[in-house]
Length: 302
Image 1 (spheres, rainbow, N blue to C red):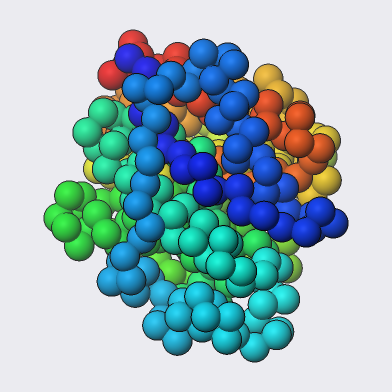
Image 2: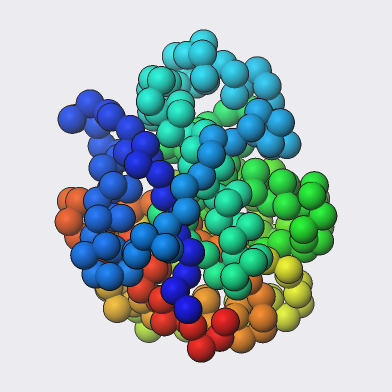
């Protein structure tokens, strides 16, 4: 079985050519997957913009409306690192709606992949680090509100700690947060996840994979979630401009296989998002395709 994929053509909103966020990667990723025959038309699902009532399960009205109307203080916009243009506002609403849709499709199919998402530095009342709204937090709150799940587990393997996600679910026993991240990387001030795994600079494939394998299966057995939300950021790659870890392409593939197999062997559905990655677009898009390649191998478990 091929996994459902969630994508919208408006994900690649225009930015100035000098901006360092690789916004074109979303369009290039789906095109790359189509060339690899990993994104057939019947697999693709297009989201709707997130309704305001869903955003407000996580974010304050003053913040989300202030961003949408370009009325935030300049310092708040600088902290986000992205401008509040009309295309980018709509793209942000669509991406959050996309992660909600991906979570629903995962519950229905056992596995689904969002070709965007992972904006884990967004807090309730402010954004940070190219993250405006916390898509996984909104998806979790929507599913809990609708009674579709009782227990969720966020696996965040982006190289940067999922600080916004950790803060949003602090004290909420319904959502378990696990973050394995560079100990010395952004954010400088870390939040407390339910389980944090800080990693040393330069850590390569073998020790990295061993560190994840030593904790993730036991945590899944302890928490016994109804759904895993997996941030498969590719910035742990050794060539990532912001990463500082030492993974190869093969290491990323083995990591994604490890996570997906650990969940699916336990009959736990998984919704994946692509998370962060910072490099030239061609190698970056290839890295972001890896989680879809891994997901496409999982039919034996579904």
